[in-house]
Amino acid sequence: MSDDSRIAERFLALSRGIAAIVVTAGVFAIFGWTFNVDHLKSVVPGWVTMKPLTAACRIFCGVSLWLQARIGFESGSPGTPGAGRLAVAAEEAAPGGG
Image (tube, rainbow, N blue to C red):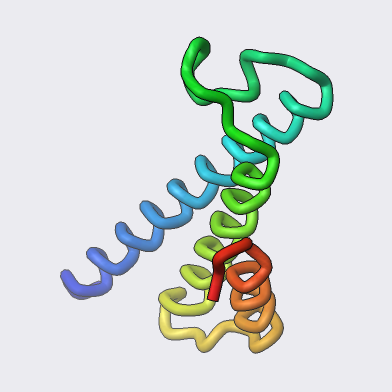
C-alpha cells in the first residue's frame, strides 16, 4: 500500500467520522424538538438551540458527505451510480443547497 493510499484512507475515515457526528447532532436536535427535551436542542446546554430546519440540513449534508466519500475513494472501486445520485439529491434537498 503506497503512502498516497494510506493518506486517502485516513481522509476517508475522517470524512466518515465527521459525517456521523453531523448526522448524530441533527438527529438529537430533531428528537429534542419532537419530545421537548432542552438538552438535546443545543450542542451545549445553555447555548442557542438548533432549529429543526438546521437539524434537517445537517442530516442531509452528513448523508451526502458519507455517500460521496463512499463512492469517491473506496479502494479503486467506482461505487454505485445510485449512491451518487442519492448523494446529490441529499445535497440538493438541504435548503440553500445546490
